[in-house]
Image 1 (cartoon, rainbow over the protein chains, first blue to last red):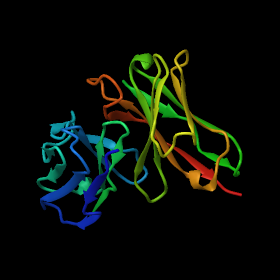
Image 2 (cartoon, rainbow over the protein chains, first blue to last red; image 1 turned 180 degrees about the vertical axis):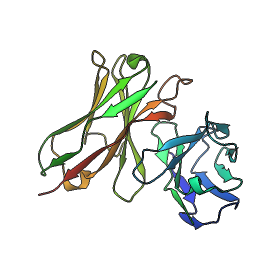
Image 3 (tube, helix red, strand yellow; image 1 turned 135 degrees about the horizontal axis):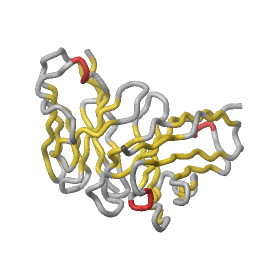
Image 4 (tube, chains in turn green, cyan; image 1 turned 135 degrees about the vertical axis):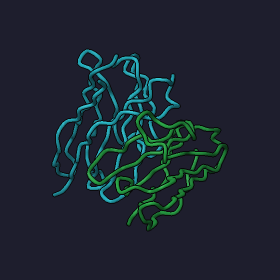
Length: 105
Length: 123
């Protein structure tokens, strides 16, 4: 099975900051990686799929990159609505989520 | 519009059976895999399994195999997650999620999510 290691587990940032979150896979997963945003009391929301494809309606300040075992989610200029927890998901079954990164003020 | 509507919160005692549901609308229910994801309060997301309602092909996470049963009734566009005997450790939020339209097969990611069903197991 594929294990996903996500870092950092939390970070403090300010509006306008560039934020980088990383996921590392235990073995190559190609580009079968998605990123989700979850706000308190809400279901996760798809942000990025296939490592770098932006989901419809997601602001362009979000971007994803990587392939194989190393992946990053970048928020180019953090906005107030972006404070949330972010999860990566590798979707070769069995799926594996990263541990999550809480982005705080 | 694709919608997944989950059944309401449940409070159960250890050892009781439980069945929660996820009713789909706005698309061809039989043609898309639906997955179930667990989230223990304050913790991360865990994949439980997937079902293809068209032929009931089901895949389970090794962590949940034998612990739960995933099923679907395509006549009423509803997927189910069932326990024969719940434990306190089953206390969590459970989400159903439909896989992305552009994929075929279970190696795909969810793009639509239900609102979640909170299950509380306590004496």
